[in-house]
Image (cartoon, rainbow, N blue to C red):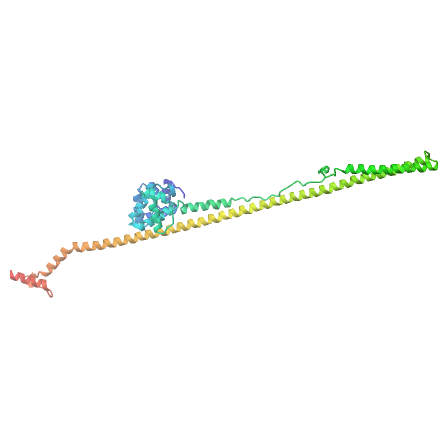
Length: 388
């Protein structure tokens, strides 16, 4: 609620209502004070009047200005007591007064503890009366606070920045950077050595056979014998190299296949983790958006409830005001009736004197004259005079 200085209040009244006076001025100022939340205390302070004088002017104009503009714990105990006294001055009492105070407490966010403390009552007494009336518990959150909370919630929802979903990167595993030694068969060299030993025994057997054949032919140690051994050694050497290379290649291919399988499995796991990371980010983003929407809905609901409470309070205050006017009219009618009776009583001697004058006959020039039928009283009066 806005706060105005005394000078601002005086300037506003002067600029907007300078052409008004009397009851019209008081009514316009009261309406403006209620519109902008200016209390009767502050209005009186701005123009040098007491709170009672401001209330009196407002009542004569058919208006009522709230005595306080604070809410909740900002309202002092003295202000609460003065507000209750103002309600009592309008003729309210009993449960009717209690309901009016209850409505005001709801409007300004005064709970049972604060009201009980201000009025010198126990909290149990206040709560017991509220329960007997079938009313809800008082809270220190009034319509004004509800509207402010709604505004804050709406602002927070407007400034909500959803989480950005970013792709989760990863470094893929590569065979080129993989150490294959862990995948190599540790017995490869032993297999090669045994294979070479087998070839060597076969070569030795062939060399012995060549020597025996050359001895039988008488050519042992000759050139033909030497060439035959050389060709045999060359063949076995080539076979040994081919066998060793094949065994090593087979071991490498086996190790490479196993490494490729592991690298593929590792990359699959990394891809899965990256996808799960993105999914988690999207879920968090959706949850954040849904949470912001829920907060916005709650803020809107609180604003609607605050507006509903404000409207209800205005209706209740209007009803109370109308009841006060009706009571005032009844009191005025009673006063008018009493005044009429008093005036009748006060005029009775003159009325009796008029009857006496009518009853006494008029004497004009020694002749007694009466107008119309003299009735009983003139006849009695005439007889008394004759008697005397």
